[in-house]
Every structure is written in structure tokens, then in C-alpha cells.
Image (cartoon, rainbow over all chains, first blue to last red; front, top):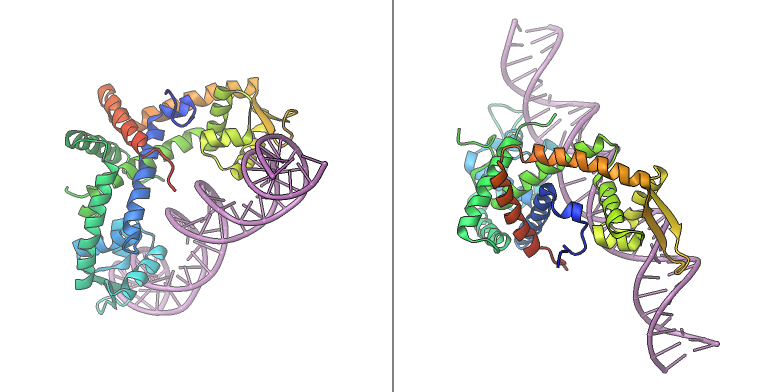
Amino acid sequence: MDNDEGTPRRLRALPSRLTNQAALAANRIVDRALAEAGVRRYHYALLAASEEYGPSSQAALGRRTGIDRSDMVATVNDLAARRLLKRAPDPEDRRRNIVSITAEGRRELTHLDGLLAAAQEEFLAPLGAADRRILTDLLTRLADHHGGRHD
Amino acid sequence: MDNDEGTPRRLRALPSRLTNQAALAANRIVDRALAEAGVRRYHYALLAASEEYGPSSQAALGRRTGIDRSDMVATVNDLAARRLLKRAPDPEDRRRNIVSITAEGRRELTHLDGLLAAAQEEFLAPLGAADRRILTDLLTRLADHHGGRHD
DNA sequence: AGCCAACGTTGGCACTTCCAACGATATGGA
DNA sequence: TCCATATCGTTGGAAGTGCCAACGTTGGCT
């Protein structure tokens, strides 16, 4: 039992690969959880940003969430069609659309928070509370250190 | 300074997102390191598997590395063109190609190991030796727990 | 006035991962 | 022996993601 499904030794021990494997599992779990509500990660990110920062332009929300302007269009379309967001022209700057979360959007966001919490639980299942705190701390330090722009 | 570049609060604290952020950084660093040698991750994985398991069919190497059969074709093509692998028909089973690493391939693999070690160092830079061991342990437990097949 | 920057939107490119189908070959019963 | 089934390498392409360019519109600056 020295094998990870036959994965080559050299790969098995690489922290970069372990991180990637964990991220793949996490993404798979999170995507599946959000799919229960017919939603993808962009939708959740946009709802969350819209709730936290209040009415904002699409460009501003894109900067907050890292979603490209062009992809933002489709995401806002989806959520507006479901009445979770509303999009209205900004009277003070007619280039902008003001995107705001609706009451229904807040309810959906709360629902998604529950699904997401369950997904975190599933992801972290093998770890106890102390280990989870340590992992979060270590990953936060890594993410902060590498968090700059990459050009 | 309670902001991660303005990322919404709900997202900032999610272990799944932290893991993903760390993985993005790790992949970026590793890909850039391998690119110095004109190589991608598939190439390294295939060289490593070929070195560890000896002459094998493409399908067997695909199972070891998780590379799809169809993508394996192009990867073997690349490495064979550089004389790092050789591909020969299997006389005992004419459906199979036997893929083996060459002496030059072993040298290149050693070279890539060096690049990869430097990449790990860059990735883990903010952590001391003890923290690195802890991180590896925690990630290994997560990866093992979620390591099965997903159908 | 003129110039430059930001906005939303459209369209499309590049890349990765995955799947389907094919002909060739092997294997295991009936 | 013959037939069904499976595996092999290979080709082609679908689907999703992230990214970028360009456009017309609008605003800010000098």
C-alpha cells in the first residue's frame, strides 16, 4: 500500500499536486452542491458581491469577483431572468447598469449558503476542528502571499 | 485592511476557495517552471510514469497518470519527437504500443525534477519546514479521502 | 472643442477535459 | 470453429472555462 492508485512516486509527494488534487475535489463537491439549486459558482459569487456591496455597476462587481466583463453579462442575464438580481440603467452615469440584489435573491443566497456549508463539511470531512483551523491558516498564508496580479 | 482585494466576505473564508486559490498559484508556478524546458504537466507526468513503471502500453500509462487515451497520443508524439520516449509495437499484442523512456529522457526527467523542486520552493515560500509538513499531511488526508472514482 | 477613459455588449479564440466512433486485434465461451 | 465482447491506438469533435478585441455610447478633462 505505497500507491495512490498507481500514481508515479515523483508526482504523489508534490505539494503543488496535493493542493491541486484537493482543489479538484473541493470544486467537484461545491459545483455539485450549487447544481442542486441550478446555479454555478459565478452566480453565487455575483449574488454574494451584490449583497455585500449593495447596488453596483457590472464593471465594479466584476472587479470584486474577478469575473470578466463579458462573462458578467451572461451571469447577470441569468440571475435577472430569475428575479434574483435586477438590472437598471444608472441615471447619473448612462454608461452604467446598476445591479442590485432582490429580496428573492437574498433568500436564494441564504439557501445557497446552506448548500455551500454542507459542501465544506463534506470536503473537510476527514479533518477535525483543530486541523481545519490549521489548514485554513496555512492556505490563507499561501493565498495571501501569491495573491497579487500575475502579469 | 479587512479586504482580500475586495473579494466578498462569504467567499473569502471558504476552505474550498482557499484551496482553489492556492492550487491556482501552484499551477501557475509549476507551469511556468516546466515551460522553461518547453514542457507541460502531461509531459512530466508521462516521463515520470514511464521511468517508474518501465515499458508500458499507452493505455496503461494513461491509467497511471489519469491522462485520457486520446490525449496520450499527442503527448507521446511530442516526447517521441524529442527522443525522450520511444514507441514501438508490442509483438505479443499487436493492439498495443510499448512506450519506454530513453537515456535522454531520464536526463531530461532529472532536469525537470530540479525545476519542479524550485517551483515547490517558490510555492511554499511563506511556510517554514514544520508548516510544510503539516500542510502536506493535511492535504494528503484530504486527497486520499476524496481520491476514489467519481461516477 | 477635442481627446482619452470607462461602460456594456458581442463575438470569438485558446485551452483543457472528456466522450464517441472506428478499424484492428485479442479473448472467452458456445 | 464461430461469435460476442473487450481492449488497443487513433481521430475528431463537443463542452466548459478564461481571456481578449472591438464596437458604439457616454463621461471627464483640459
